[in-house]
Length: 370
Ligand code: GTP
Ligand code: MG
Image 1 (cartoon, protein in one colour):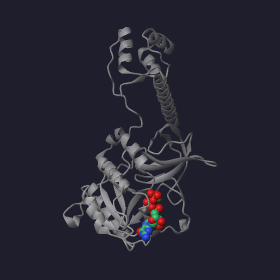
Image 2 (tube, helix red, strand yellow):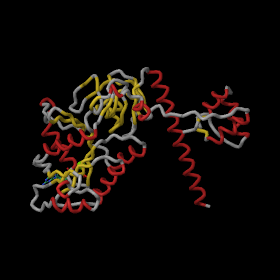
Image 3 (cartoon, protein in one colour):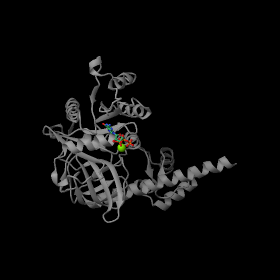
Image 4 (spheres, helix red, strand yellow):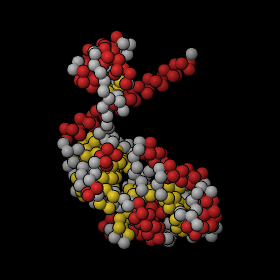
C-alpha cells in the first residue's frame, strides 16, 4: 500500500510522465514510467511542486476481502464446505479422494472416465461438499501468504500402519496456522498391521485429542481402498461445516481462487477456478491473477458444460489471455474494457516487480564477487 507508479503520480500532479522522470533524475532517482515509487520519493516530489500528499487507501482491485465486506447480510446463503486433503506421502490422500468420488458421484455418464481435475463436488444427504485436490503444501502456503483462504476444513490423512510422519506434522501446522478445523482420517485400517490407537496417541502430542479421550478432534477410521468409513467421514465434514456456518452471497459478480491452470494445445489457457462468492456466467469479463479475458466456456467437475457456477463450485474455464498460477485470485468485472485495463495493469506491475527483483539479485551477486 501507499505506492504509485511514476505515470500515476504524474497524472495526479497534472504533469507529463517525462517531466516527472526528469525531476526524479534530478533527485537522484532513476525510474521508468511503470516504476512503483515509495512513499518518501512521492513526498519529495510533491514537496518540490509545493503539493501536500494525502495518503488515500490504495486497494488492489482483486482484493477479495474488500468485496466480501460489501456483502449485504440479508443476501448471504448457505454454501458447501471446501475441504482439502493433506497428509504424509503415500498415506492415501489420492486414493481417499478417488474413493469418495467413486462412492458418491452417481453421474453415470461421467462414470469410468477418470479425468484429471483439481477439484470436485459430491453430495451427501442432499448437502454438497467440495474437495480440493491440489492445494499441496506449497499452494496452501502461497494462498495463506496472500491472505486468501480457500479451505474451510482440512482432512488430515494418517496411515494406520505408518503413524505420524514429518509431513503429517507439517500439514497439521499449516492447518492450525490458517485456523482451519482438522478432521483426522486414520487410513489403511484394513491392513493387518494397522494400529489406529497409536495414531491417536501420537497426535495428542500436537493437541489433536480425540473426543473419546476428552478432546475435541474428530477421528474417523477409514479404508480408502475398501471404501470403508467414507459415509461417516462425510457426515463428520457436514457436522463441522454446520458449526462453521459457511455462507456466501451468490447475487454478485463472482470472485475466488485458482486451483490449477495449464496451457492446453487445443483450447489455450485452461484454469480450474473455485468460486468463493457470487455467481459466474459464460461470457463474463474476468481478471485472473495477471491474466484476463472473457469466459468462453465453463465445465463442471464431471466434464459437463455449464452456463453458471455459484459459491463453492469448482469449474474449469477457457478464454483467458494467459496461464494464471494456482493460488491466484480472480474477479469478474461488469465490462470487458475494465477487465482488460486492470488485467494489463497487473501484468505490467508483475513484470516490473520481477525485473526489479532480478536486478537486485544480480547486484547481490556482484557484491559477493568483490
Ligand atoms: P502422494 O500423493 O504420493 O503423497 O501419496 P498419497 O497420499 O496420495 O497416497 P496414494 O493414495 O497414492 O496411496 C499410496 C499407496 O497406499 C497406494 O499403493 C494405495 O493403493 C495404498 N493405499 C491407500 N489407501 C489404502 C488403504 O486404505 N488400504 C490399503 N491397504 N492400501 C491403501
Ligand atoms: Mg497422491
